[in-house]
Image 1 (cartoon, helix red, strand yellow):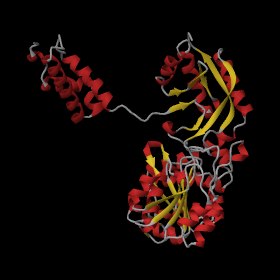
Image 2 (cartoon, helix red, strand yellow; image 1 turned 180 degrees about the vertical axis):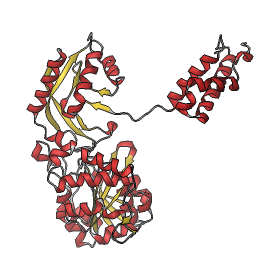
Image 3 (cartoon, one colour; image 1 turned 135 degrees about the vertical axis):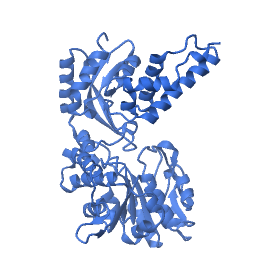
Length: 453
């Protein structure tokens, strides 16, 4: 067994640490913790016979440096999304517009009027920020913002339907990413789930029969991340509203994706919009902020004041409320819609609206600069639980490789990492989701990784 007396003492190491600069760089308490960690590891490995030679003073310090860097290593890093998936859930969904990013920077670097009224000099309300813009944009009586759409749905059900019946089509008992299931959320809220119809076919009469008994809500959960095809049917939102209101029951529409623009204009299937639900007479609508709206993660509740005010007073409302960064980014994003500039300024819509010919021109420029690769037609997807199976025509830069998965790994090791995909044995890059200012760095990385193909 190795003689552990050969290890340098903590006092010896501390004297050397000042010279090595670790304390200046990482702070004294954390540096001492790292040194002790290295010494403990060395002792344990020596006891197990896994260490033939004890580290000397310099070795301990260098190991401590490596440990400190590992402990403080950033885990949320910028990447270049060359996959062609516009709302890539694993890559943070919607990138913010420049104005939204600047708005966030302004509120986090100084004090601001989150809940302060400059005119009166007294406490104000955070609801005057994004919520006022939402009301102006959609024409609703009331609006509120929470931290995501799952929270919005849970809050609405808790406030409006605890211990009461909520009627929903069996075909809409969805599960989205992370195991979020509508039935589980309803159970957590205390609402009583009432399923009607069958998996593939639900009729208006199914709702009408269920409405013969007292109920708090009719819930419509939009198929935002899946399709049921074949022998299917569901009543439209107009029919649901009429049937529910005839029975004196409110309608809650969980739209999810948060489309404020008509996706059909851009060659995609029509995604139900907030405006359509409100026009149909829906009482409360819930949407996400970071999907087709193109803003930060947020849950947005819109609707009639009698319901939204009740939701706002529920104890969970404070637990789930949005923070200052969310409200700042969301307000800036909503301003783009009010100025009729969303297609030009909101990155999600700019990517969706990008003509295939413009994509091809960028791909051709990439190939020309690289001096290798092939240009081929392909498809981009919206992603992010929106418009399932819908694609946009695009052009791809494809590079042949005998080891495509190894090349993908090499691209991910770059700084910033480049995220691409494999198609027909080639590593392919879709210009639709790459920002122009990222191109130079991405091409340099591709050159380095594919130097010998």
